[in-house]
Length: 194
Image (cartoon, rainbow, N blue to C red):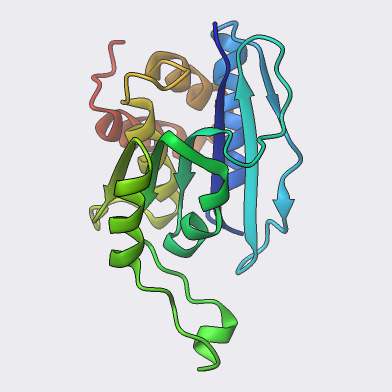
């Protein structure tokens, strides 16, 4: 198996750490070598959080500039912050969520134009999967699972959805396990029978 490198980016409280744990658990279940880097940033609300995961032979967790095959971005500005990790064949799965930093809320800066960013990205990398809307019926705490599901549906994703389902069953808290699984399956376009 060749290496596949993933960057997961978001804001503290969006579940970057949880997605990292899920993917590592799924890789272990699938018997795929996996390594993760330290989580960069503070996993507390309003701070940027970035994690790198490498799957395949001779793995190490660090993802170098221009090295990410997939970007899973839980927030628009965080996707922009990770541009330097992408290469021309990268696949970016980006949620439409915007969380304004303090400087924007204090009227000292502007939130970057997201349409221009998406247009630019579509010209520079292999594929952009932009999640324009997440159904209101989905709990905000599970938006990260929608991003993971959309990524896992891609033919080049390193871990099959069935293994991610097993990881969800193993790691999700009891009261969220069934709902998490349902949200993932809907986003990945799989039935519960894989």
